[in-house]
Image (cartoon, rainbow, N blue to C red):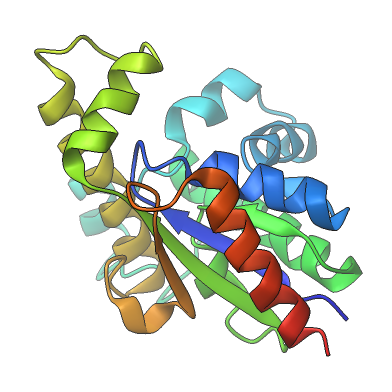
Length: 205
């Protein structure tokens, strides 16, 4: 059986494109921003509210102090008490676990490798790229102008790292978390998909 593939990625490294192309090639479901819509539907809250909180850790120090020594998972309050970021994490975690239980799929970001740490058949991947490559992609994608792009890329990576580190209590950039690490400034998206397809089919034997 094919594994569940989780993809963590640096901003601008085309990790989304790698995951989407791989899912299409394997004929399995793909989950990225669709998780926001699914979580919104499940919670009854608007997509826009969850989109603003997506892949961002709770930032309220006051909330953490009020809740006591609030390390995520140490004391889980009622979901209605939680900051929107934590609500989204809980709901997305549930959706990711259910998706993995139903069969092979590709999940991009959102601590999927950690959430599925007890799943018996996962291939955990980290996609990265040279900073110059990612700065160029940020401009091409229209996310920022050339002057602001280097700082923008650094900020987005820090945001993703903080999110992962907060909810998993592990380090986002610790390569021991992953089975494969691919550099999209050395390999094209299609070449990365080719390499992943070989690995996926090897694990499925």
